Length: 368
Ligand code: NAD
Ligand code: IPM
Ligand code: MN
Image (cartoon, rainbow, N blue to C red):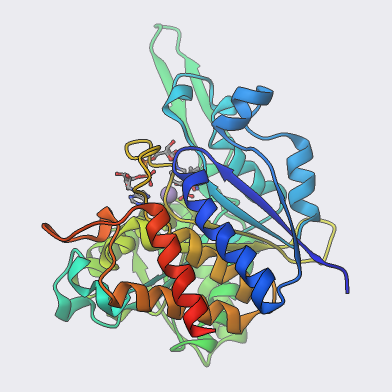
């Protein structure tokens, strides 16, 4: 069979630093576990703006479409904070999601036992936490029209964004959530603000209707997004699968990351089907950004990137055993007490990005 193609897009800031650690693991899987993939790499975000004057080239979009999976780092660079929106580094990830029609972003928040004390919450509230946020990623207020900044006759300005969701857009992402729930604890909580937004009201109606028609074996609840943020902190284990729109999913997943110890721990998979094809497209990335405050220091936590690779092995490459091996190696390394700065307690010693990557690799060699 033809080699599967993986496109690596490290991006900006800590992106390249953490990608390097994931690539070491890919190289090991190729050498020792018979993983048969072809890697290629390209630049996106600020790195692409600097070199090609655009946040992402059409050529890179085409490569991503042709790949079996994309492993993405992160984009964003304060150097570009004053340029117009269409020339920001962040356009790279937004365009990739849109043009590959990657509408379902799976953001699991799972607490590794050894990190119980790194969680921002009390051990009794988070022990065993394992939830999955399914975030819609090609619609909502991120893409709705009209949008823009206009100057009013009196010289002041008006900034506009519009939340838009259609029946079809809601249904397809809800389907992903219900299907996942069937493989987990069988519960879905749908999150919107239908009390104040029509797009939220439609969201609730469409999810309710789909549930009735096709998924009555799954337990469905609904929650308003503000209450949901509170409930995630009060009692996060009440949730199994959550499904929500683009913006609420962005906020709630960053919030959920702190329940597991750090933003640097959470991976994601974004799945979809490009228009005009029936092939699944997939992009894997940490949920965090380029962390300009720590970039270049070699102290970023590479585990979200490494766990994103584990998701790729499971969802795109049919390598469930390798995926589990990586998760086990991460778990063992954490159990051994190794900590990057973001998950270290006061006074605990800290390892570098490369040392953490090295430790996971060593543990893999031991386990395999
Ligand atoms: P961020 O996620 O980059 O960082 C938030 C905080 O978490 C920072 O203090 C950072 O140091 C810390 N952090 C993040 N990842 C970490 C890791 N792996 N290890 C240790 N600490 C980590 O969010 P921000 O600072 O608001 O945004 C910075 C830039 O990243 C912005 O340009 C933003 O648009 C972009 N961004 C990109 C993506 C993406 O590429 N998908 C996601 C989020 C933000
Ligand atoms: C994320 C990021 C992106 C988002 C930005 C960089 C466009 O915050 O992947 O969570 O808001 O979706
Ligand atoms: Mn985000």
